[in-house]
Every structure is written in C-alpha cells, then in structure tokens.
Image (cartoon, rainbow, N blue to C red):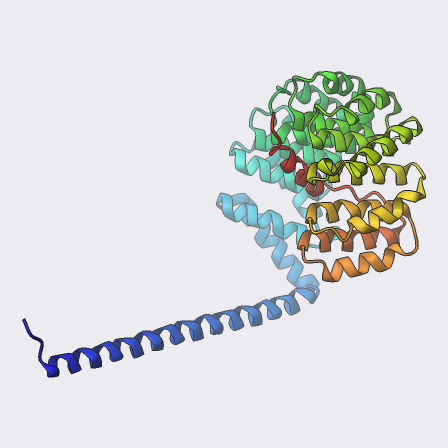
Length: 386
C-alpha cells in the first residue's frame, strides 16, 4: 500500500506540531516549578523574619487561651501541634499549661498522645511529672517506654536510674532493639546510672548477647568512666573474633577510663595494621583510628599527626571519627582544621560534626560523642559476617 506525498507531508507537520507542543509543555512545567521554588523560598524568608519578632504580651495571652482550648477539645493531631507550640513560648510563660499537662499524663488512653505528653513534659522540664514518667518506663508499648526514658534524663533525680535498670533487666539482650539501646544510653547519661555497672558488666561478658547491644554497653563504661571494666574491655578490644564496632567502642572506653595498661597493646595493634597490607581495609582503618584516639586520650601526642591524616580520608565515616579525636588532642592547630571541615567537607554529617566540635572547643568541652556517630558505626557492624 503506497502512501501519497501529501500524506507524508501532513504526517511530518503533525510530528513537528507535537514536538513543539511537548517542548512548550516541558518549558511551562519548568517555569511553574521555578515559580513554586521561588515562592517557597520567599515564604520561608518571610516566615523566618516573622519568627524572629518576639510576641507581645497580648499575643502570648491569646495564644495561651487558644492552646488550652485545643488541648481540651482538639483532635490528636491538633493537640500534638499545640504541645510543640507550648515549647516555642518563653519559659516564664509556660506555667498555665502545667496543670492540664499533668492531668493529661495521668488520664490519656491514646498511646500516641500519651507518648506526646511524656515527650513534652521532658522538654518543658516538668519535675512534678517525674513519678508518672518513671511508671511509664515500664509501659508495654515500646514508643511510650522510649519517650519516658528520654524524658527522665531531663526531669529525673538521683533515683530515676532504678526504673530504667529494671526495664532493661526485662529485655531480651540477645536481640538488638531501639528500646534496649535507649535504656543503656540513658543509664550512661543519667545521674546515678553508674550503679548499673555490675549488671552491665555481666551482660558484656556474655558473648551470646547481641553484638550491637554489647557495643553500646561497652560505651557505657567509658561514658561513666568505670575502671572496674578495664579487663573485659581489653579482652574484647584485642580479640579478632569480635565485631569491629564492639572492638572500637571498647577501645574508645579504654581511653575514656584512662587505661594506661592498654597503651602497649594499642600501639601493637596499630603496628600490625600498618605493616600488613592485607589488613588495610575499612574495618581495620576504624580500629586504627580508634586506637590512635585512645592514645591521645591517654596523653600520647605522637598519635596526633596520623589523626590529621585520617581527617583527609576519602571515607566519610573515617573523617567523622577523626573530628572527635582531633578535639580530644586539645592542640591549638585543631581549630583551623575544624573550621575548614565545617565549611568545605563534602559530607554534611562531617560538616555538622566539625561545627559542633568548634562549639565544644569554645566552651572548653571535648566530650562530643553523639548517638548519631555511634549509630553510623553500628550500621557498619551490621554488614560484618557472623
């Protein structure tokens, strides 16, 4: 079947028209997206300008009245939003909410709302809510329990570690869970948490427990600076059959507890990795950098130059680790390195870590271990073979 020249020409014109139309449509979409981005950016700037202006007394009063009504009669989503609004108010303007928050903590049946009220009680520092929050630590709902554990760090007293330890004793430590990690981290941070060291030392020795749980347990001893764990930490740190994260966290804690007897073993481990090309891999690099960091903690300044080299490593996790150890060295040249990393490092996480380290440097505090950094190393350990 032959096609006429006229039909071919019509077909070409139709194709051109479709092409022009598609091009126009694409450009229109691009223009629309651009306008939306510009509008969004403009709105964001306006919001920031408005946010920077302090509320007048009348505005605070009106806002308080609205929030109180929302907390009484609003939906769950509205009440959760209202709780965040309370936290934005000046501290001396939050008293009108204490009664309703305490009542809601005791009466609330909705688990998601109960979690929200517990979180706010912690953020607002409601000491009167301490007993209710301690009871919530034992809640069967994991989210509620975790919220209570976090809140206790802010409203708890010298005995608030007890319900946290009791909850931990009821957990299956052979399995990794966010709640168990939260409980161990809280004992490391909360006043009186050092009283849990005998139980945690026994669990650290049990090799059948989850490697991740044992890793955070090892960190606990360093944060609380419990010297009695020195022997078990050394056994783990220099045992090649243990996971890399568990070993590095044990090494970290040996530095924190000032284990001077570990210095020869740390140097020996570094030399083994340095001399054997087959050991020059990511896991051993982490072992090496943590060992160098521990030596810095133990007063060995010869490790500093190698830590500086690690801050230039292509692996962002290695650079992230180096930030803490640079700060621990307390050397004057560290500031220039951190300033560069905070502005120009290709990894946003490294930039943030460097910026946080600079703040600590200005405050005279070198303890910048963060749960975010710890979770990075734990994610690495999950990739290790059993």
